[in-house]
Image (cartoon, rainbow, N blue to C red; front, side):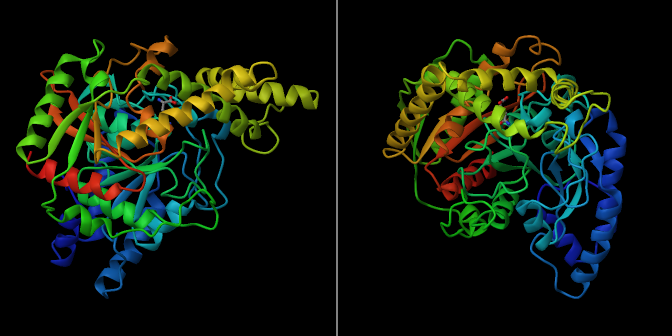
Length: 476
Ligand code: GLN
């Protein structure tokens, strides 16, 4: 069987009876088995996926299947699926079975997607290389000595290495877009509040957003259409009606867009030269397609990473306080007092990076430092958001790199948190501003490593991103 690049293709084969869901699932199981060493899956849901395949095949036979019938999808291991383990790749939740399903999982199941397993990620989604996972690093299939990116590294490699058709990730500061960029797939992060976070293990609640990793824009559009929209269990989800993204994305729109390149992101010395060339070529292609491309200045670039790390660590320190050895997961059974139980359960249950962030976040929220750090960062976030909104009043889309370099070597940056944090410089803008963004593949560099470009749009203007991405990749 060859690699399927979209659900449309699979549904065509299913309709023509050239393929059954059981055969399709067996193919993906086989792919997973053959590529186990990449460490993309924390668990394969053999039983529930097989049962689903049987039920949905029967629905296909009698014409009652949902619109995701034929989609075999992996979910990042921080998304709850009832009666399945969910760990956030942490020792803290190693054996934790979710008593309920997240809204995104319910919506996938309601449309007959098959959930094939849970995917490795950085611990509690904190990281940019999938090296902080308690279950080990994920390897990039383009070069196994290199990282997959993070934090949704397993999601990216599962799609890259054809172990499932699509994957869900979460993106707090780039965790869908950057691994997609490192692994050559399409990473889509919607507007904050477009998709429910109910049942998604929280990292930084005012940033967290579910996103998709796919090989086609049409699958990204379809998944968004299914997942987006109001949810009574998450009051931060917008009630703005959900457009038919599949129609708008696939329409070959003749409307020409105005794109603005964030100048400082391209002229930076830190940007890898081959990435830069690929982005400049992409810009020429947008121009050749009749779009207008201008340059704009983003003078707050230096504030993005500090603001992001002050606010997200603050939110994380609060969110992760629930893992106390009593309510959830890991417990030190030797502890002699309640205080000792809290201390040792957390000391033993969390990894280094998570502890670092809890300490940073606790510090910026503590009396005496709250005004100087947390409150100030809140104000800077407002400025960043206003600047992004202002720029997007004069254009439809902002362009920038996704990451300063292609996938780096495993172990190369892990000892230096600052180097790691600085690599998030281009993705955190959309997260701080809450705007939608997509990472699009631009082919490979000389060493065969994927390159990519980022497009960002106005709040709730996912349609522009999807239609532009579709026409751009179609003409690749
Ligand atoms: N690399 C960023 C961080 O470590 C982004 C993570 C994410 O989006 N979950 O916070």
